[in-house]
Length: 306
Ligand code: SF4
Image (cartoon, protein in one colour):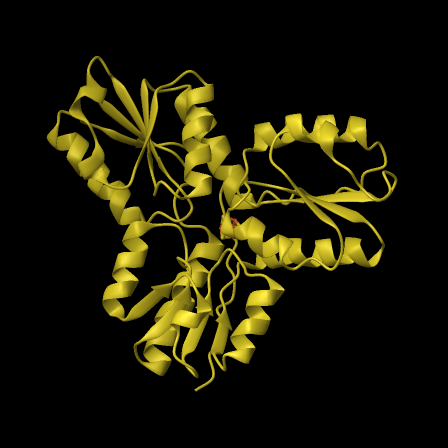
């Protein structure tokens, strides 16, 4: 059995930055440091940070007054920012700069009098944060079937932004239908689906065509990891999303000659190494790294004040 590794895979610049911010805060301010929601959607990352002294909470009210509080990579609403001030928390924003860019475009559209369609998964923290930054009318849209029901202020003044981790293919379909309903719709110069999502989906597309089984390393609540599994399935290749090697079912390997492996943008590389080791203990041989898009994007980690 041969193993193929997708490229690129795993951590993106926004995840690296968010995790580095938590590490730096733990060193600078000493534990406990509070984080509103999971800093990124990966159970292993969360557990490691928890062991170092990070405390993950779902409500600001759970945090003691004056405590250091980090906002996750997915971004937060204005109401959360305001509430944190009222509660006297010392906040640090780990929102990915590419999510902040989406917020800025939405605010600009509102300043021009547009209704903004937020294309994304209802209830996902990034979508909630984006909608909560709005200064005008917003409408969350997940599927083309919802388009006929949209009621906007002026059909000639509609723009859209998207969640950064959507399926490139599904979003292209939805946008096609949206342009029919709103021919004058304002579009971003470049898609809001980020470089990391786009590159990882492209790599899995290529991978899925070359193997009999795809394993995506990532947590069940990770949007971009779920999309990677779907990309492989769309190519008619069986695919599973696994949090770690222990979740592999040996029965999946029956009759399989080549296994493809990738990892979501929030999944650490050591988990991929463990999956490879597990497969090698179960009969796999050679490991081939596929060629892929090179990534050179890094985001500066802010220097936290003492
Ligand atoms: Fe930023 Fe994209 Fe990574 Fe999300 S997946 S943290 S938007 S780089």
